[in-house]
Image (cartoon, rainbow over all chains, first blue to last red; front, side):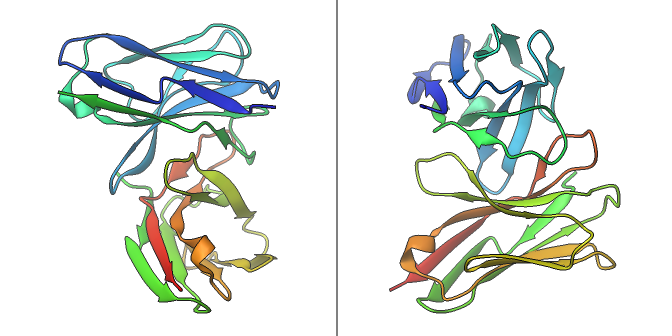
Amino acid sequence: NAGVTQTPKFQVLKTGQSMTLQCAQDMNHNSMYWYRQDPGMGLRLIYYSASEGTTDKGEVPNGYNVSRLNKREFSLRLESAAPSQTSVYFCASSRRGAGALEQYFGPGTRLTVT
Amino acid sequence: QQQVKQSPQSLIVQKGGIPIINCAYENTAFDYFPWYQQFPGKGPALLIAIRPDVSEKKEGRFTISFNKSAKQFSLHIMDSQPGDSATYFCAASAPGRQLTFGSGTQLTVLP
């Protein structure tokens, strides 16, 4: 079991460029999440998908879009990258959404926008 | 608006010491309080979690203390080891709601 995998591991973008961060899980989990981690800010939820076919905004959704491609895959897209989106992005999954369930995190994507 | 306030931001202890990380919250609907551990270059991983119906939970050298009336909870690491050096995040969630994370504490345990 690979758990939660993310690609790419590192990315440098220029302001205005677009890119998609990929995430996949092999634990047959229903729910998936995208977080960003910034120094002193902890982990902030960008979007989540409680189940296949549904997506919802989290705390900081502006500038991002998501696609729940199937039960395994959940992608995060930056349409026009801004320096404020420089961050480490983590994908996570859980057996089902909300409530007291363990979330399993991927290794992260370190994104720099210049 | 930070719903879960975590302190300190960083903490250095000697091997064998007992680091304590504190979190405070305002939302009385929160009913699940996990702690996540993150090593450099890795994603966070669940360490231990508590519900408000108990005041303390121990798993190995890790203990959560919970004070419902004060709306505070803390993580204690007994007999800390250099391998415990990591960033620790507290979090909280209300029924049917997503997790809210604290800002993190970078712990260094000196050999």
